[in-house]
Amino acid sequence: MFWLRPIAIPKSFIIIFWLLEIWIFISTAVYLVPKIQLPFNDHFSLKLIEDLNKYYSILQGSTGWVLYIITG
Image 1 (cartoon, rainbow, N blue to C red):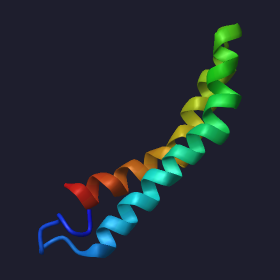
Image 2 (image 1 turned 180 degrees about the vertical axis):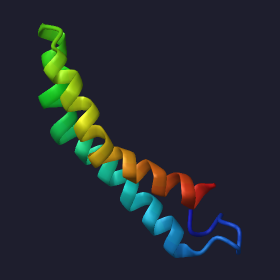
Image 3 (image 1 turned 120 degrees about the horizontal axis):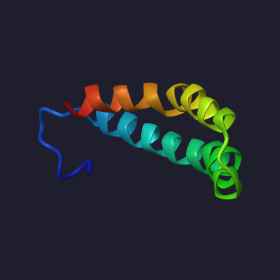
């Protein structure tokens, strides 16, 4: 990506982009899948949905907005 990017896009944006993508992957693999998604396979729970709404915005929502701003 460093070598195919347009000159107007700084290297720091590419680095920030990949760091945020890695953060989203790690937060999904470590927290969201084992603590929220896997229990949904066993039973439906309102508490799990509330946890998903609460923690998704903290772990991935803000990161998504930064990615949107960088790539937009």
